[in-house]
Length: 353
Ligand code: 0PR
Image (cartoon, rainbow, N blue to C red; front, side, top):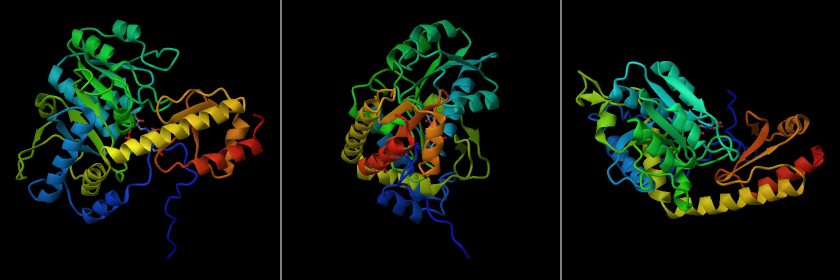
């Protein structure tokens, strides 16, 4: 029987996933056959989920977080909106978010029957505060800001957005799915410690170096988590707040292990190395005449011609482009300076510069 080769990470430059930390891999293997959806039966993994939540609380400035380890950012975003909707009980609910918001918000709006109002970003790809302010009304149940956008790695003005949300009685949600494990080492105001935000998405399976699937959903107040709970009559535990039923114990155990191992020093080292890589790559691209977008977090975007993009893909580089055709290089933990040098050498071969 032929076996498929495992993913080679050398040339993966646009993914938001990475090689899991060895401790995360090992923990995942040990908990493969467990189901945190049934905590009374699988008690060891349920205890690890508490550890993982406590770590996520430390990372995001929340001393007693409510929430759980989700399947990823999509589930966490859907559930944050669902919690806000159930809590608000509005007959015509809307959600206001910058247009840079991840496409999981469209899925959420669709499954939850909520109107999604996306508003323009400013010239530097951040949520335009005035536009958000104009879009909210008495039926707004949630305002979202992104802390580390998918396309440009930008951080929205979270404190300002929080004020707008709370002025109309809406919940404030921050999507830090990708940025959450690097932002603690920057000056950005993004977390529960910087503004009275209500909920957050932060994914261990991205910069957290856990195995897939491991997302994170956090609430400041128990009320919002409780707004998700349904009764579970035949289980020992009496209610369940997650969207999925049976869940990956491997994801949960690996998230707990990765954070135990890496927070804070391991994550800081990765941030510093990958931010330096991103800035170096940006300078190299600009020196070659590409009109790059300055990396605020470890993500570089630059418009490149179709032909060059296709040639680089043909050479095996796993790269993608933004909606406006900028090449995106996401400097995840597996991306080395050496591989960026090799990428630039290939770009020089195929490019006009
Ligand atoms: N929020 C933000 C800010 C994101 O960037 C993403 C994913 C999500 C939410 C959704 O997270 P899940 O994919 O865990 O549900 N952003 C990446 C993207 O859509 C996901 C990705 C990851 C894509 C790895 C490719 C890949 O190889 O581009």
